Amino acid sequence: MGWQRRHILGLRDFTPEEYELVLKTTHTFQGVLARQNWKVPTLSGKIVVNLFFESSTRTRSSFELAAKGLSADVLNFDPGTSSLTKGETILDTARTYCAMGVAILIVRHREPGVPHLIAQDVDRRGVRVFNAGDGQHEHPTQGLLDLYTLCHALNPDAPHPSLLEGKKVVIVGDILHSRVARSNLWALQRCGAQVHLAGPATLVPKGFTELGATVHHRLDTALSGAHFVMALRIQQERIDQQLIPSLREYHRLFGLNHERLRLCAPSVKFLHPGPTNRDVEVTSELMDDPDFSLIDRQVTTGLALRMALLYLLGGGKP
Image 1 (tube, rainbow, N blue to C red):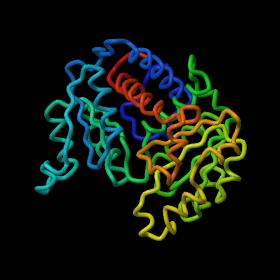
Image 2: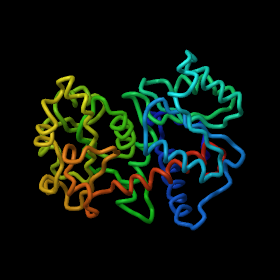
Image 3: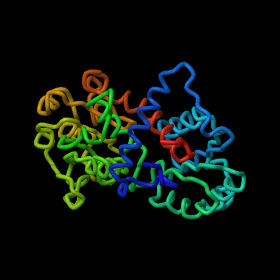
Image 4: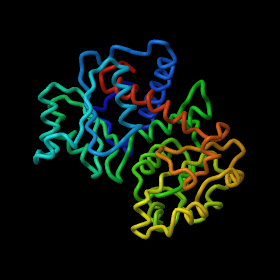
């Protein structure tokens, strides 16, 4: 199949064929990254802008390296020193970059829907837009890199979405406020995985069952027989909102450690999209254990995955 999408804004409407193509292209770029010189000329002469209105380390740096690996010229937007401080609107900022001849805008914002609004506005100019995280809505590239990471763990030589058919994947933590959880939920379910969500009732409401997930408020029950477990960051401001009593109490009830992983399948692997609060969501011992942790693999995959998506949106042949 050919690549038809003009923008990557969310995963809810991705088809199985699109997931397969993305994973296949990512696997190719994993091989490219293994070369001494891993630059390719796909985006040579094109400008890519990291339009981040919110702080980021992994996603922003990964997109920048990926664009440079495709030979693009990269601009990093800083909202604190931009004309936003003078009253300029977000759309006017995006239009300004479009007038400079930008080819791709990578947008992160704390409000849901902002990347979609920008994509709708700039589409007629032929500019492509990535959603790099919008509020509590979605984080599609994180969902896709997690999908590849899981499939690679099952078959490093030929990662394929069908490998997740029937596999139990548990996501633990603040599901209510997590854009990562939503993107993973859409991707994993579409690929046939059984998705279980675990956490306090204040952070994992029963309403998520309507999206096809199984909800647990006891971690041990959720972990039984799991093939993969993903922990999400507990945002410390949630304590001020009285959604959890304390970080210590959360770790006691829902923190991951070696002992709890014994409840899972013998081959269980652990993921975390980062940043991580050590000894809150997961013990340092488990986080640094290469026999269980896929965290480093997630970061490495992020670069290959974003190169693959920029390549496809930039006109590269599947």
